[in-house]
Length: 428
Ligand code: DOR
Image 1: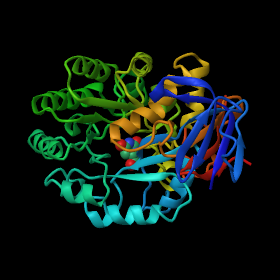
Image 2 (image 1 turned 30 degrees about the horizontal axis):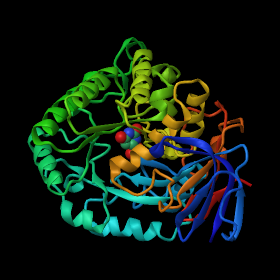
Image 3 (image 1 turned 180 degrees about the horizontal axis):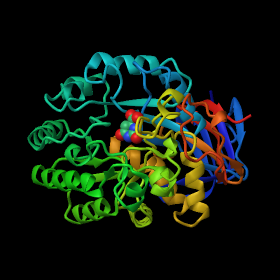
């Protein structure tokens, strides 16, 4: 399929570009680019996407998604998850290994890729487990998993708390120039923890989850990553103290990157006030000053990426007592609308928003995409920044409905998503 994307505002952070441009896509790549109406007349498109009044951006890349397959297909499948991603404007997602069985073996990685190959939706980049069974005891076969298609390693959902093993994992990963992604949660500081440790949790009778549970692990990991000169990525940063640690480490040249979720950018622990299980998440929503620090960090580059931590659960795990409910919030179909709200509120510029949602995740994961110059993959998203609507979980493509953002007014959304030169989502 040869596609002309006409009359759009091209926002391409990798080139610092924000101006009207026409694009011509052919053979899965960006084949030509020109000011409006100036594409070479000999280029014949099979179809034209009129992007007048819209933004054309490099396809969004989410480096933290739970697809639940294999094992929990009643929550999400590779098919529903990758179609939900496309509907949210994502052209690629990295999927976490906490499935059943976990992705700790190349047969699971290969299965995920095979299954994803049949879906008309976003691409998938499997993240494999650091340890066998995500049990924190024995390292997985990094070389084998990378060869099978894994793009990095995490025990997400669990923290790799053993310092000795984490050191070995960093050394092992470094030998492949592979990325380790840490779910930073000191288990001994979060036994039975349910909500951010503070006056609200005390009043609600919920056992507290202190910031230091995250910060203690990140501080230790940063020292180890610096000592070993290894790449290290902090998943779902939630606290102002973690931001400070990352800022200082980056200033010292430590090879650290970090992500923040839309829910930590938008909400505080006030969201759990009515024991709303849709706001029960790991790590927990914190206080106003944490939220402000996360926004500042995203703006100044201390935090590199927005990642959703899309964690679908069914009503069986969510419409129950708070202490028994599962942790997690879905994010694939709300991240871009909430990001556009950050732009509207002047927290981020459009260039910075799409840097955090596309260019930076591609750089962190060492995957293609994140840029729309001639020769780059034809992975792009057409965004209507002026399509106000109310978030409605019943309209999600995802099987997960667990969001605390139901009813939120948002300014716009993705209206078309193109992966490898094929339109995989279009708003009718
Ligand atoms: O809230 C969360 N849910 N945080 C995680 O780290 C894991 C995730 C899940 O798998 O449900």
